[in-house]
Length: 288
Picture 1 (cartoon, one colour):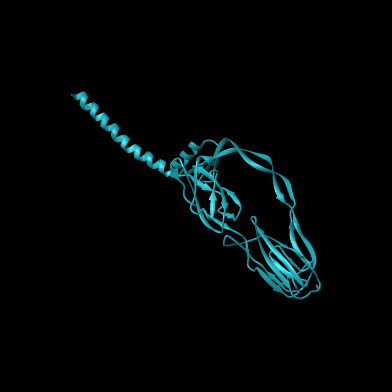
Picture 2 (cartoon, rainbow, N blue to C red):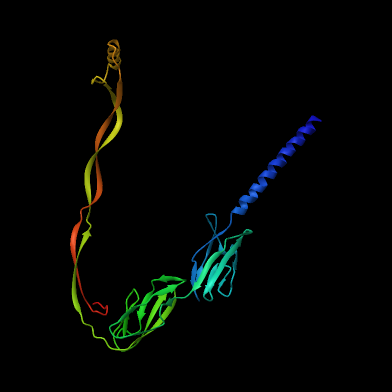
C-alpha cells in the first residue's frame, strides 16, 4: 500500500512539473518571432531585397512565406524581392515556423521637384528642391542646355540665355524634371575675389620618451608620527613610545622596484597655414 502511495505521489509531482514547464516553453517559443530588415522605401518600377532573421540567425528567404497588404502598391516574391507598383504605402510581413513577423512599412515613391515649370529673366536664379517619400533629399542635378540655364549640386538654377532647358533631378533610379524658360539674355559681369583662410595642416610624428613603471615589491618602510623613518626595528621603536606614554602611531608603505621604459607615441606637430583661394563671381550667382 505504501509503495502504491509513493508511486502515486511521484507521478503527481512529475505531472505538476510538466504542466508548469510546457506553458513556459510555449510562451518562450511564441516570443521568438522572425524579424524583417531592409530598405523602407522603393522607387516605383524598381526592386529591393528584404531579409529575415530568426534571433541572430539569418533565415533563407525561400523558407518563409511572404505577404503584402496592398498588391497594387508593392508586390513581393517568394525570395523576398519587393517591387514598387505605384506611389503609396504597403506593409510586408512573413511567416516562418508558424510565427508571423511584425509588419514592415514600405513606401513606394518617385522623386518630385518643387517646380515643374519655371520662367526666369536672364541673370536671375532660383533654387529647386527635391522630395522623395515625403522628405527633402539631395539628388543629382543636370541641365539639358548649359548655355541657356545651369544648375549646381544644391539645385540653384541660373538663367543665362533666351531659350529653354530641362533641369533633371535623379534620386534612387527616379528622375524628376523641370522645364526652365529664359525670357532674356544675360551677360556675365565678373568680379574678382580673393579669400584668405587659416587652416590647420597636420604633421603626425612619432615621439620617443621614457616613463617610470612599477615592478615587484622589494621591501617596506615605516613612518612614525614622531617623524622617524624606519626600515627595521619598528617594534622596539613602538615600545619606546609606549613606555614614554606617547602614541605609537605608525604607517607602513611598500617599496616597489622601479624602472624606466622606452615608449613611443604619436603627436601632431602641425601648424596653421594661410590658404588663399580666388575666383570670379557674377551678381547672378555664377562663379568661375
